[in-house]
Image (cartoon, rainbow, N blue to C red; front, side, top):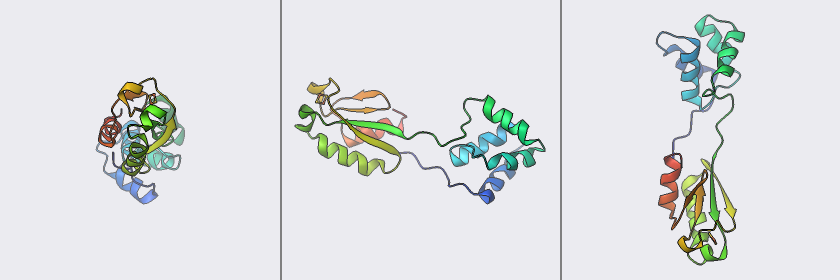
Length: 146
Ligand code: FES
């Protein structure tokens, strides 16, 4: 599972911004997102000051580029099949192992029959169906972004 982004702090944000070479609004916003996983609203005035720009200019760039996020990225979705066929081949222990491995990096939920009964236990990671799933297979899919 991937490392969690740093928790927001003004002090950390100022350090990140001071390390941007040839600061521009876009590079500064990318640096902030790289550090915190998204660009919190509180970062906008800091970026504006670092780039000698207005808050409106920073907000304009922030909302223009789709790759810049103003909110934390959604958790990855892992659905483990709890249908009878999958339970017969270890779905319950798979679900518990995945929850232990994933911690709070994923949202693990139950689903009932994915139509993949012959290849159970089955799971879905961000829309990708996995058959004969193990916790290691699910963890690898999560790490690879599905
Ligand atoms: S019971 Fe799990 S895929 Fe059908």
